[in-house]
Image (tube, rainbow over all chains, first blue to last red):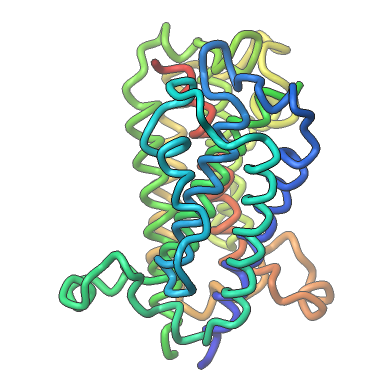
Length: 160
Length: 160
C-alpha cells in the first residue's frame, strides 16, 4: 500500500479540522444569532448551516455508506434560496441533524477500507469512471472539505 | 507506489480548480471594483487577493521549491489589517505577482517527485517530523487549498 494510508489520513485530518471549526462557530449560536445575515441582504447563518448539513447528508449515499438521513433538507437549503420559504427546519432541528450526519459520516470514514477511497462514487457510472478515474470517493472528500471552508469564510463575517 | 499517484493527482486537481476560480474572479476586476469591500467595513478584494498571493508565495520555500518571490507582500497583506497602511502594492502589482507566484508553484508541483509529497515541509524540524509525520508537503497543499476556498467564499460577496 506504500503511502496510501498517509494520504487518506491527511484528507480525513483536514476534513475533521474544518468540521471542528464549524461545530465551534455554529454550535455556539443563540436562536437569535442564527438568524443573522452574513452581509446585508445575504444568506442567514441558519441557511448556511442547513445547506452544509444537506450537502454532507448527500455524501452518505455518494460514498456508498448508507441512504440519506435528511433528504427533506434539500428543498429548504439547496434547491431554494434563503428567505424564499417559511417552512424550513428549526434551529434545533438543523443543529441535531448536523451532529448526526457528521457523526455518521465519520463513522463510515473510519470503517472504509483504504482501497475504497479510489473507487468510484455512486453518482458516476462504471462506464464514465473507466474514462476518468479521478471521479472517486477521495475526490468527493476533498471537494466537500473545500465547500465547507468556502461557507465557513462567509459564516465568520456574521460574527464580529 | 500503488495508488499514491492518484492521491497526489487529486490534490493537485482540486488546487488547480480553486486557482482557476480565483483567476476568473479576481482577474476580471476593474481598478475600481478591486477596492470594493466584501461586506460593509470588511476587507477589500485587493487585500484578499494580495493576502492569498503572499500566502502562496510563502509556499515556495515551505515546499522546498525556491526562495520567496514577494516577501514584501507580508507587511501589506498578512501582518497588518486592511486599510491600516497607505503604501500597499497596486492592483497591477498584485495581479502580476499572483500570476507569477502560482505559475512558479505549479511548475514546482509538476516537477516534484511523488515521494516528496510525504516528506516534511521546511517549517517543521526533523525531530518534530519524526513525532508527527502528518506535517508534510501534501498537508500544506490541502490546507492552502482550503484557505483559498475560505477567502473565495468571501470574495464572491463583493461581486453581485
